Length: 214
Image 1 (cartoon, rainbow, N blue to C red):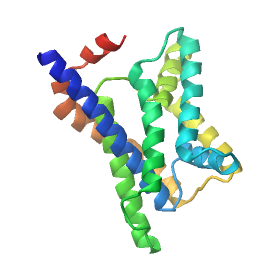
Image 2 (image 1 turned 90 degrees about the horizontal axis):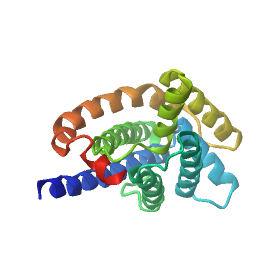
Image 3 (image 1 turned 180 degrees about the horizontal axis):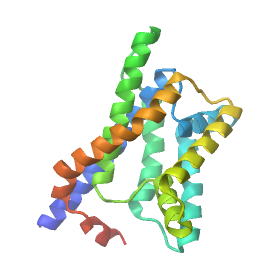
């Protein structure tokens, strides 16, 4: 009974974290000051295809999951698949219904951007603390680190710069917000992970969800 209760709580935390993280992404888009490197790519692709931003997130996730599964010869965790699907769905939903009035002027734009960064970091910390599987991009970073022995920081940097360049070529939005996000999201996520693990992850119990999924 306790195990079932913790498993249900893990999934609730997972989906709540995904929703909050997705809304944070949308707020950084609405701020219109430039978005994260990956979102520059997502929006750039959406501009030149019939796909929505959320669909591009999903298609990119599918491609990355396929690459990771091929490299490790193993199917991904269900949490990884659901992460990719629901981030795309939530992003499209919140872009249609942003829950706030579009910011006017630089002050409002910066406020919305900062709130978006904080929500993204907190949401990511929440879903990671559920221990139900990493996102597709994080999974690729970890696999490349494990298989090739490359430093995680170098892998992330190369991936994000590549996504940024392709997105920029396709017309994705880049600006001061892109720089701010790049320098702040790491510390925000780091703090969020420590907070969520100590207050939520410890209660949920690391690994118990993995045993059910694998």
